[in-house]
Image 1 (spheres, rainbow, N blue to C red):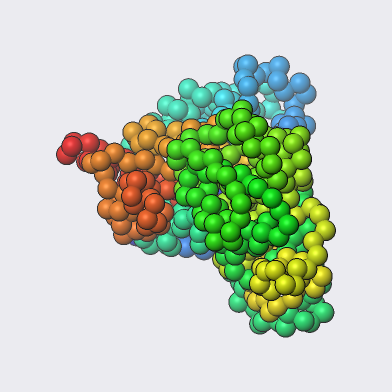
Image 2: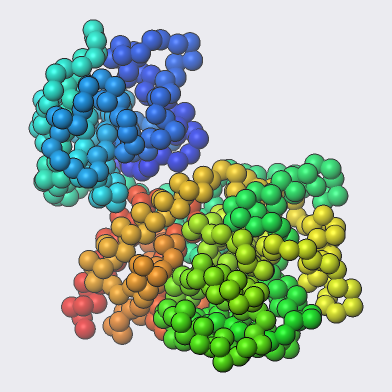
Length: 543
């Protein structure tokens, strides 16, 4: 392989990557190592495929190497070796490494080093403190050189014998330090591959969702569209545990205007909470609709004390509704939805929530919430310009009090489609909510966010909201005076990384944000972190 042929190391995520994984698996563990029976499809789908994470090496769009990792018991070694734990040192969390395979045409040390480098980072992210592997006897010496320790008897059968081995954190940390000194491993090069979108909107979008968006438009009155529209509504309600949802053509501001419009009819006094830009915008929505409300404002990035809210409600016994932001996008702070639900339920107050930046990024339960807004173009991972209002009660049209387009009752009595709606946007949203396993996505965002926060802190950056009270999908960096958010953002853009810094409220405070709302994976962050570390070091020396 010539020196200019670039290798990409990443976590497998695309359908074509998994198909090539099954083919390389067959080539290695059927044709080369006769561990499994031949089949006419020449595909070998691992029995733990749905639970595996695959670390892969690509040359252009050709898979040249892989390994699988899995932390769920029982391992494949549990089936081969009785009482596996009796052979192992004490540990809190074990990972099994399997299916290490490199295309015979590309067996160089560079590919193995790249796969193992990304493996070490996954071990750190998830906190594994022991790794086990079944090494073929022909690769026993290699694995021993890598720091793996043999244990127990040889397992397997004729032509496919394996030595069980394990590695401690000390072993792979030592090996990782050696690899750190090796040049030329390109996990991801945004300038040569694609722009990395780390914005809170529009977000990075899965290819299958992008492909769906380009389909031929359908009439919003066609039977197929109506059926698929109802299916999408049901999936959205299932995602957030809500009885009803209306889907609107417009942004999150439209959804919040619809909430304000509902509150403007036959409702008494309200209380609006604000600890950031989007709490302030709720105040603006309420003011424009002439709502009768009190406001409770605290500093940006601060956390509401529930007792403080109770005191405010005690001072105003006539409060009929409370409106707040769940995830305050401007800071990354997560306000306490469950605590607010409990307060409002106890006092008979209607709770309304701006859930625009939380739906699709964290588990959320809107049962007991009166009205809540959401959008398609953030955590749900689709294109912008669809918004939604969730609710758990019956809504009737209000023909003479609010504009038609803001009348949720009109949507409710028209099967959700009183006006033209883009089938392209709807089907993209439908695909987005179907292709993602929510629980798996929430865990991935949380693990990636925790690792990223740790690395940013190590470099020396100050993160605005502490991890316990922050959305895992939003990291707001409060820059010191000697680093300009505008200059930093532009410099990162030149390197292919899009971070949020252009909003007036961010520029004013010298903040910059990394969003994990869209499609992204851990492998894209290494060049970004290297660049941020270099910039921080340069700025520190110059200050």
